[in-house]
Image 1 (spheres, rainbow, N blue to C red):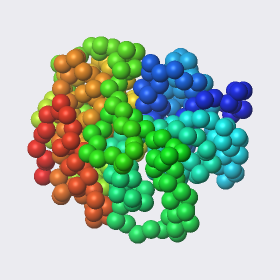
Image 2 (cartoon, rainbow, N blue to C red):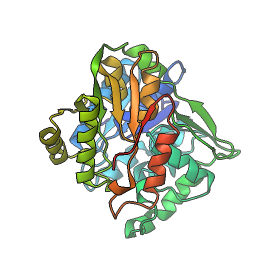
Image 3 (spheres, rainbow, N blue to C red):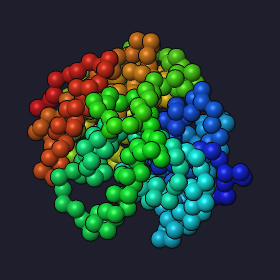
Length: 350
């Protein structure tokens, strides 16, 4: 599916690496007039690739051009991808990105001459990006903050610093952040536009609502933040207490962990083919959706507005955290919960 961009070069190039990022490009483009081409920098993870292919179909149905790049398909793939995109990058007037922490995206930002940059949501990471940009800090994912910088971090440091400068508004460049996340403080000059999931609500639903509860999974174990045994115990307790019958797996959750959850909790494990906002809006969905601190506690109330579905969030107890977890982890996760609107807060499980 690799190919040369359509001629003339599109007014807007969007770079995405996850299904959620592509969903939010669709939300950003809803009711806007823009000649837009989406470039998918495909990851290697099969679940993410599957969801991205389904989201690419929806993007084409919405009138967008989609260019699929096997950006990680071998040692030479990054050079081939970047070389093939360089001309379009230099000529596009606007660049839309979904993950400012991505080294791939940061490298592309050093090439572009676009006067307009747009950052669409990549979930709760957007909150950290805005805070770091406002504080003049280096861009680093929240679950890695406080750790030692490795050799690759040091080598890539100049590229990351250059990307951060590109993402800082100036007389030559505008920066917009399109987000459903609550932002306490944006860097001076950044335009913040609210994402209310208008495209999702117009495209899907309203859903059929079941009587029971559904539970949303998280990749906090896979990212080394939460102890796996504590996580399984918490899921078991939540499912028993609230009568949950289904567990919607995060695309990054390991097969081994999901098998253990199925055996020990009796929950039906569902691997969604689309981002959960679309799955929930399409239905059927439980009257109550249970989640740990994650992006969905901010996005699902917007996507499901007016349906009567209740979103409840269970805090992560400090006892769940692994010794290797970032010192920033507890505060960040607590902030995700306390800033969520239109959700029910459940007490943390010890």
